[in-house]
Image (cartoon, rainbow, N blue to C red; front, top):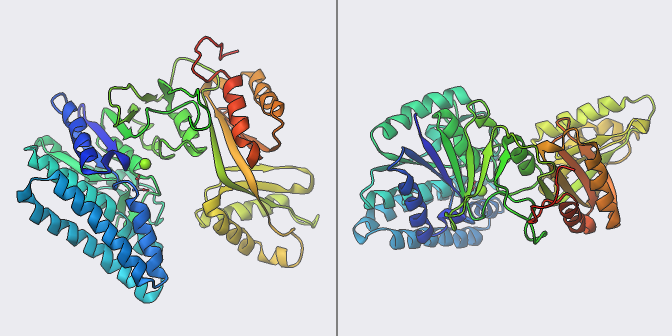
Length: 476
Ligand code: ASP
Ligand code: MG
């Protein structure tokens, strides 16, 4: 649709009645100029609460479930009372209770059978988004704005990877045209749930934690939007985590590729898969702060003219390095690696980095702490025979590591840069454990001892002149 603006609001940006009001007025401020569609996350912390409730259910802990359900109800009832005029309280409370009852029905089943199947988790966990989309659309209507809540399970068609589904763009485009476009054409503001979708045969799915950004970009691509604005609680995408690096700055503009690399390597401001659906249509994205909307934010564009060296450095403390080493010379290291990676892919483990060495054919890969157990299980079962016979050394895990990544399109073909990065780290006496440079030359990823991570990040940020002082020549 011509000139369509898709606006996505994260959990803190809809975390209370007051924030929902602010979100609605940010959308309404643009609406005189162009059509707007909203995509919303659950209220802050609600998805964690829902997932925790399902863990209690699996354990058969009825008291824990009841406690969480009471908190879930109270948070949304409070928001309803604060947000809406008294006349709307009864019907909207009823709708809230209906959504929570659906959630309770599914978790009740889990408690009865002591299971927590991914498929049922996906059916239940988007309740938070349904509740927030309901409240925001009701608020808009109460303000006299024609609005409609849309459950993305009627729009976003995905594969059947529960918990981390991928969109199927053609059927999604078709559904968006049927379900969302007619509303926009009638001047109705759609408020779409983030995070969720459904398979072609209607089984509910979710797009992974933090997936509402991805929902918004899927919708923007499906509707040929002209822009996507992602509202969060920070000023934009920064040159480093400001809690680690006090002189970190907000970047005015970065490319899709840079943003994706930053997200994959631990920058929390954007879900890593957000940019992919936008590449073909080259839809520009803004990352903006709903708590300080007057600030410009960061513009994310398909390609940038300015080649500006290293732009940002990210860090991920909660990772672990898993190593494998064939002991038998008869064994092909490439085979072991291929089977391990295959097992990891099947277990839906995200491999954050991978290095190998020719001699003795050992290799190691990096995963998030949360996926470590699943990763080791997957590899151990794929190589059960080789491990049992001692052809492969027992899987080694090193949890005392951290990942940092230096990102910038302008690093391509700047031979001195890697040297400067490593010199900066070594000056801090930080131990480098593994290095990976993507084929794109956009990113240098470095695994260091965990206690050296923060020092290394600060040293690189200073060395590459990423901080406030613009006078530094960053393209050296
Ligand atoms: N509410 C979901 C989560 O917390 C999705 C999102 O916020 O983007 O993961
Ligand atoms: Mg988010």
